[in-house]
Picture: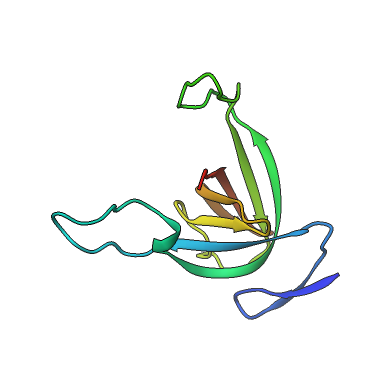
Length: 128
């Protein structure tokens, strides 16, 4: 077992069997400039770390529908990922945050909510 401090300052014993992974939360920084400026979309270079090293459980979820690209190499069904993160901080994660797991995969949060066990974040895998 591993002891992990929660963001509120409290401590809880986190069982590495339940939360075997770690994630970092990134948020897009404010955009500035008007007129002719460089690319304004989200890139890793324009993200700021909110918090890192959070214990997490990451679980695959099959979703209804087909991928939007509609190209021959698409998977037959869409897929998503649920992140379960123990935390007392109710403002930790929000929609459009980027989660990066312990093996470097990046996910965009499409829905996030807090409950008595911590955060649940639904996310989709990013290609970059």
